[in-house]
Image 1 (cartoon, one colour):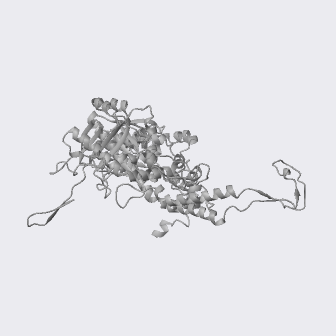
Image 2 (cartoon, one colour):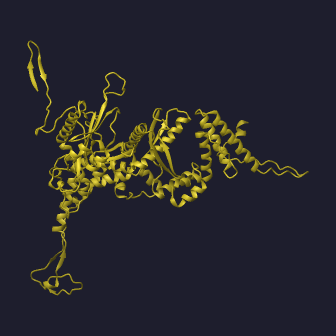
Image 3 (tube, helix red, strand yellow):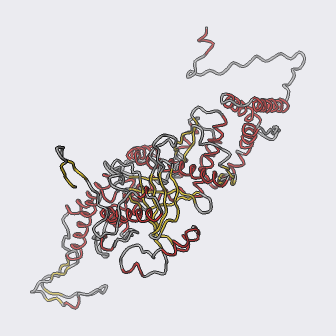
Length: 638
């Protein structure tokens, strides 16, 4: 900072930023404004090195969090010596401990991560065409989730967020022209602290070690740059250099554009760059308003971008618990051993005191006594249990969820389910964040797939369902130009345990909310799968014929082998649904024709009523049944 005075004017304060750090190697600059590739490479690599050096505190904290969870070190992938930073002390290997961080994390992962939220594209007052496109896109998303293993990687990302505070998934175009989803450690991601003060940074840098040959094969135009890049290692420890791998450090950076409208005056596009220390591998303008990442924060920060995890929140409790367990273990080893007390005036043969079974001990005078002294005060064990309980309750985890044991007096199945619902309410905010992971992931996947389709002309994915697989072609949808909203739904609202699922479905069938056929379909048991498929074959066939009429205008006439009564009912529902959504008159006429032919088959299959014999008196009509629970309409009218 420099203060100067102009002639007769007020004082002027000039702020100058530091161009280099203390060792003179990291250049902090606005790399996205570089005019040539040499300047871009130097400023990008320098900025990444500066952020890495300035944010050593964050890497150190992440190393501590990961060691608290699993006892392993974490690499920083940026030239820092992690072995000097990771100094978390723990109990010796031969001493017992209770890993409160691991218990809390694994409980939440098994509790919330067991769900597989399904993103659904919903129309906002659209006609039947848009609804059909939304249905196709829903199948496309499920196919892409299956192809990219999104649920498996999403669960790992969720665990990363619980332990380290933040987890990340990256969505990008693979070299096979397919969408790829990678789990990314937040130790590889860097944002400027000032830029991310409000939680919405405008630039993001990722550091990653990659195999040299693979990187050169995927980027043949930059093979010379990649070959000239020096070999890199996870950190600066001596053991890192003892390896047979040949890896290079890759810098990938994004700068968001200045605005939403590309045609607006003053709009400045963003920048996406992939580089090594030797040069630029790939560069393009970036017009998207978001980074190609999905982030999850367990505890949102008041300021900044990165969240706070379980390990940081339970750090003090875990250390206190370790100290108490260390004292308990040491006291048991020193004091809690059997001791033999022999009176000095008695005559006892010490050789008889051995480990043999049925030994005759001769003595005269006072009999030897065997005692074990109390090892620890009861308050020490009470404090141990209290710390464990308080640590779990701090994160909203009950004893039933942590140990799998139900509380006393909770005997009925309905009581257990109600108790679980109360506990789930404590995780409602975390569950919403977990669902939002897959909503954001669906948007990124569809956007990336559309970019690939615009460049290559097509993009197909395989949608797996109960009938096999089905190919979905994205370009035929043109769906992102229409008003669609994604919402996330759980895979099932029914309990996952077999006993709980059977009980919940049985209650709904008994109450009349579900039919027996619908209840069997919801069971999802493999031993009933063949019976369910045969039992629902007629219904699935009707749905297929009606969907072909609505979607493609293809008509298949009904026959006597289908459930004609059900076909009659479903055809009426299809007409009422799609006529209100603007169905073309030609397709509506096909539905009416299908309805008429179904009724013709019903009439042909109905035997005529028996004719009464001549002179035989007619039987009086049977009075309708009455019930005190149902009011009698004729009496009310009278």
